[in-house]
Image 1 (tube, rainbow, N blue to C red):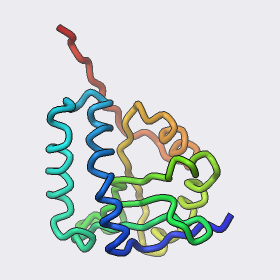
Image 2 (image 1 turned 45 degrees about the vertical axis):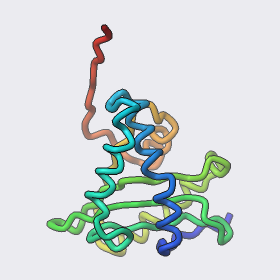
Image 3 (image 1 turned 180 degrees about the vertical axis):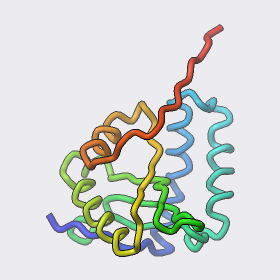
Image 4 (image 1 turned 180 degrees about the horizontal axis):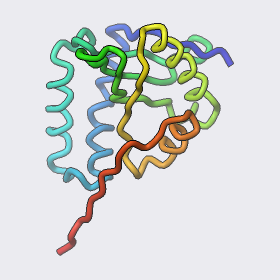
Length: 156
């Protein structure tokens, strides 16, 4: 398996934006945090605030996961301006047909090495509890839970 990590191009960013906002909105609806009616506008608002300058937004980095030269996934993170040793992963995904085949694990090894060379020592990520596959992956990769947010929805 020939996995690589490459910088996004403008075309990659445009393609990413064509689905990322909708997927983010859908995850919030599935979690119960947002209603279906409000999700798209809230998600778009967050993306607009974070990525004011698109691909060139300060502190934000987008890499693509490639398998044999073909883009099969995305990795978006923000590097902390006050402490450059910390990043927060906003999004990481592997195309459905490549999930469960070791692409994410191999990619993370490359990402971790690249981040280490940049001086990064702490990687944080938020994962919705309904995304059990991602939770299993991150635990397997060595991530630890550092907090839990719990919610109780009162039905009428």
